[in-house]
Amino acid sequence: MLKGALIGCGFFAQNHLHAWRDIDGAQIIALCDRDTARLSQTADAFTIARTHDDAARMLEEEDLDFVDIATTAATHRPLVEMAASHGLHIICQKPFAETMEDAAAMVEAADRAGVTLMVHENFRWQSALRTVRAVLDEGRIGAPFFGRVSFRSAYDVYAGQPYLATGERFIIEDLGIHILDIARFLFGDVATLAASTKRVNPKIRAEDVATMMLVHQGGATSIVDCSYATRLPRENFPETLIEIDGSEGTLRLGADYRLSVHDGDETGETDVAPPLLSWAERPWHNIQESVLAIQRHFVDCLSAGRQPETSGRDNLKTLALVHAAYASAESGGRTIAMSEFGT
Ligand code: NAD
Ligand code: 89V
Image 1 (cartoon, protein in one colour):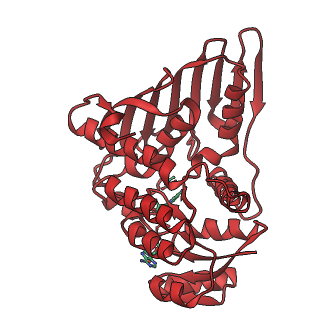
Image 2 (image 1 turned 120 degrees about the vertical axis):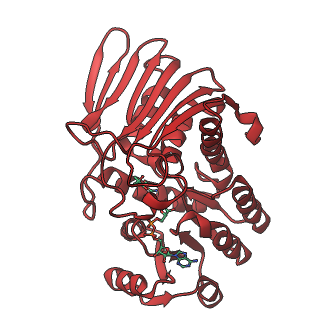
């Protein structure tokens, strides 16, 4: 049994902890948060006796195999470096880092220590998106030449995560990072990117709308569009909608998890709604299901001695897309070659 500690007992960590209870082969034996009220509430809710308000002390005192870091980005580098120096395997929440330099330093620290570092980039683990990827892998629509990966909502994310309203950057860094990662997952790595952003909601500080065009190294073009200012007649939060045109057919993942695949002759419609886990709550259940899947993947990778799909090194490419998108938007939509970011 792998023994883990969770650092950061805030809004999203509760999902990590529920998921850990469903995973054989790993157990969270200690919790850390510098906010002692959150720490004790979480310890009571999940019956975890060993608690710490200081991560450095926890790592000295506990006998651990891994840490699960669920704090916000500014604290990731010191926590990852500290865990690596103790020889512990690491899960680190997204956004991996605020800067590419910090992200690269974390990857190096993990490599030096010989430990596994996985970024908790969970959206690509949503079962509907795994089904989309399987359809592509089966070749049912041929070679994709166009894609759209779209997340548009007016859900009040600020209620649960107030920092989203006050940060200097918002939608690309917080949500776009997932949607850009899905575009990489479906269409491969990216050669160039151009972006535009907008702030529609006057009550928040940064951009809440972003539209990005990606040219993938394999030749497909994709549009990645994100909005938290889109008032639809029926709220889709937190569904990612997909359109793919391939040489032999088309695929559409529409609202309410309806998947339609047209292979040139026949059209198949499937319901790819995620299961509602016992601890999940609508509408978050597809994200919650993906949390379980990615944490299970981490444990599987440790036991098989392989790198996770969203290793720290892999995630440098997703994070570079985020930085390229801001650079493009700030320059009025300049097309950025991803080689400028070394990816
Ligand atoms: P939060 O502010 O609610 O929780 C963070 C917690 O970390 C707080 O309780 C804080 O006291 C604690 N903390 C911060 N620095 C610490 C340190 N050095 N030592 C110990 N404790 C420390 O934030 P949140 O909304 O839970 O977000 C956490 C991370 O999860 C963010 O990076 C966010 O982007 C990410 N997130 C991911 C998803 C997803 O689907 N992958 C969804 C929501 C949030
Ligand atoms: O998944 C996330 O990273 C969340 C949200 C869905 C609100 O964007 O912050």
